[in-house]
Each structure stands twice: as structure tokens, then as C-alpha cells.
Length: 146
Image (cartoon, rainbow, N blue to C red):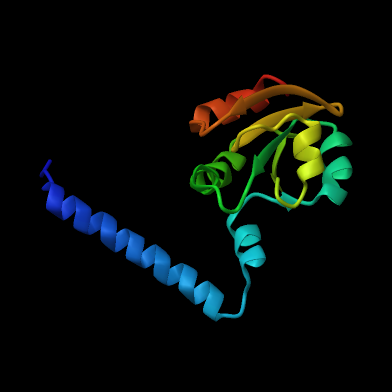
């Protein structure tokens, strides 16, 4: 297998970054706003008003990603959560809650750092993890409570 020099690797990473930025720019040029962009990119984003119906009343386990749009690690988790959503147990789901839009819920559930992942089942928190998580940890959190 041919090796890539550090300079070539940096150039490739730079090209990928440039392509990603071009796609983001075209999204905004098309007339969408940042709220649309984050909803488009991620697992279902819910509001405080939807929390009870989407999380507390859901029969299966729900992983809630407490995040903020300005949080780098939270944004880094977005693609992983999209990927994981395809492999979670039947009846489970993943939702995201912006702590800046729902500070009362973040406080109520003791969110002190983001990203924070809390698994709810039957209206109660049954598991949690803080910080960036590998794919397998996210799946295991939901599988444990399915």
C-alpha cells in the first residue's frame, strides 16, 4: 500500500475541508438559515415543547444528545449520530436538544458539560455518557435498555 507523505495528507485534508465548506456555502446561498442547516445535518432536533411527547412518552429508549450549535465536539458528533441511527435497536431513537434553546431542561437533567448523552426510558433517565463517544458506546447505551 503506498504511503502518503505528511504534506500530501495535509493537502488532502485541506481539499476535503474546502469541499465541505463549499457545500455548506451553497446550502446558505440557496436561502436556508442556520436553524435549517443544523436540522438538515442531524438527527431530529427537538424543542422544549416537544420534549415530553418525543422523549418522556416514547415507549422505547430515547438517547437525547444535549448539545449547542457553538460546541465543536457536539458538531463533530453529528455525522456519527446520523450513522448510528441506522443501527440502533428497533423502537429506540435518537434526538438532539439545544441547551441554549432549552436551558430549563438542561438544568433539570443536570447537564453540566456538552455533549451529554442521556438515555430515557419510561420517562426516566436510565443511563448517560458525557463528552465525545465512539460509535459502539452510543449503540450499547441504547441496546442495554431495549
